[in-house]
Length: 313
View 1 (cartoon, rainbow, N blue to C red):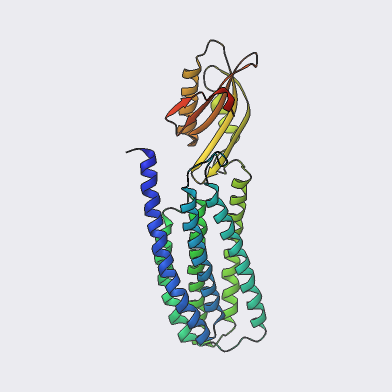
View 2: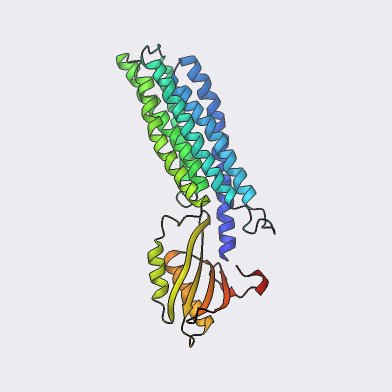
């Protein structure tokens, strides 16, 4: 089975999980919104608000995955992979803004906390917790290596924590009559969500600015290439992320005149793929007199070729 086919099958499985998570989240969003209104609970309303952004985030994630599958064109030579990164960025912004709004609402309630129906609040929040656990488990396996899915997963985890906060506040209200527990728990969870959202925003911006992937140290990549026998020097080294799980590298490599291009390039390609997981390579080979000889492109670590001279990049 080819790598491409395996990735496609995994993607289809991820899409199915996203659709299931979207359906159950939408249904319980309506339940929590009604329950929060009836119980007069800010924590429940906040959690329903998070669920609303979940529905939007999951829809955005699904749309981005569909759009990213569109083929590359002469105007979009990398295709539409970056739509997934844009979706992750927008999800992070939405999470941060919603959390700030909840903190503001909690501040308004803090001085004179209204009466809250603790039992109804706890019951509805418990149901929300179950739904969020199911949704989070569906998305958990893919969120670590995909920024787009991580954005959706963070939304769901924010809801999960919001449900825990609402349950905690409900128990405190039932047991001690502490109505202030409702806005307090809302603020605590919002702060946690803001931190996660900020990290997602920063990582998305780093990809959009074509920064070096955080799991790759450029100095180690340079050292690995220089350690290859026959390599005399390297310059114009760049490593960036096209989309989640797709890293690319371009470089100019100076080598001894006695070294064959194909042999040297094969060793470099294998080392970069094995040590750093980089398979999309564009390498310009140069002799010691700094005269460029050829540009070679390696795709998916399986083959290398020299493009037409009018299309060197």
